[in-house]
Length: 445
Image 1 (cartoon, rainbow, N blue to C red):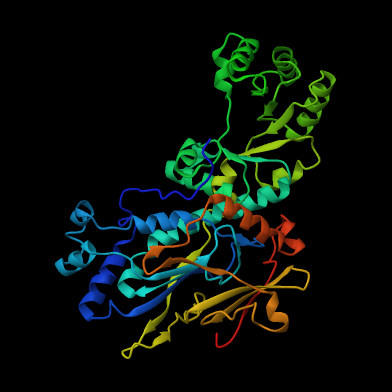
Image 2 (image 1 turned 30 degrees about the vertical axis):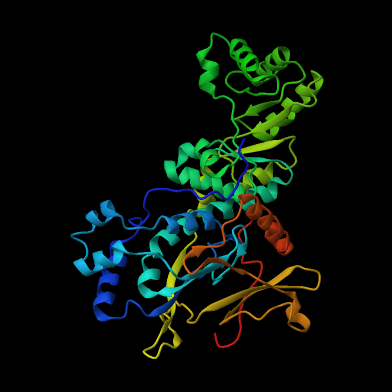
C-alpha cells in the first residue's frame, strides 16, 4: 500500500477549467496596458456556511498541481481562436505563472474573512487562476469541513469514506482526499489510492450474497478468498441468522460484520450481544446507511466500531460549497506603488490591501480570535506580551513561480488534528451555531 506522499501529479492542461470572462478581461487589459500591473488577489469567505462553527481548508495540494498544469498548449489554444484575439493568444501561448502565493496550510481551520490564498503577480497572471482555484478550494474545503465534524464525533472509531457512487467521478476522488485530510481512515475509491496514496478498504455488497445459492455459500466464498479477518455484510436476509452463520464459517476470528439498514443503534446492541455469546468478542461492528455527523453522534453510546459514510460526506452534509470568492485587493498605481482596492457593495464587501492572518490564543493555548491585518504579519516570536500568543497562519506555497509548499498528506492530517484541538469546546457541538471564535481586524482595515 503506497503511503500518502507529495508526488507531483502530472495531468492534462488545466487552463480551460475556467470561465470565458477571465480571458476576455485579460484581452481588454492587455489592450489597455494595465494587464502587467502588479496585483494582489485574495481567496476568502465572507462568512462560514450557515450554522457552521468552523471551517477546514482543503485542496491546497490539488491547487498546486493544477497551477503547474496551467499551460496553454496547441490543443488548448485552438479552442480559444474565436474567443480572444491574436495578441491574447500569443500571450497565453507563453503563459507561465511567475508570481508568489501564500496560503493557509492544508488541514487548518478557517473563519470569516480568513485569507486562505493570497496571490501576488501581474493582473494577467493572477486573474486567469480565479476559477480553477475557487472550484478546488470551494469543493474540497466543503468536504473537509463536513468530514471534520464526522471524525470529531466519531472519536477513536474510524470513519470510512464510501461516497464515490453518489457524486461526479472526479469529485469523488477529490472528496476522498479531502476526507482523509480531515481524519477519515480509509476510502473505497481506488483512484484516490493511485493518485494520492489514500488507504483503501472494502469487501462486498448485497449483490455478492444474492449471487450465491445461499448466504452460507456467499460467506464461505468470501472467507475462503479474503480470510477470516474479512467483513461480512449481514443484513441481506435475517441479521441474527447471518451473524450465526458468519461466526460458524469464519470462527471467532471473524474480522467484522457490517450493518447497512434498520435501526442501527438497536441492531448493533443485539449483534454485539450475539457475537459475544458466540465467543467472537473481537469481531467488530461497522455501520453504514446514509450517515452524517448527527447520526454518528447518535450512535456514540452504541457498540459500534466504525462508520462508513457516503452521500452526506461527498455533498458536504448540507453545505456542498464553501462560498469562497477571489477578489482583487491591491494593485500598483502608475508609480508602481501598491494601493488597496475593494468592492463596496452593501452585502458583498471586500477589504482592500494585502493581508496577514494570525490565530490568537489564550495563555492555555485555546484559540480566541482570528486576527486579520493589512501588510506583513508581525513576528509573534519577537513580539512582547500577549502577541506571543499569536500563531501566524499564512505559509509560502509558490515563490517566483516555483511551488515550494507541497507536502505529504500526513502533514495536513496532523495539522488538522492540532488546529481542531486548539479550538474552544463549542467546536464540538453539532448543533447550528455561530463561529467559535470572532474575526478581528487590526490596523487600517
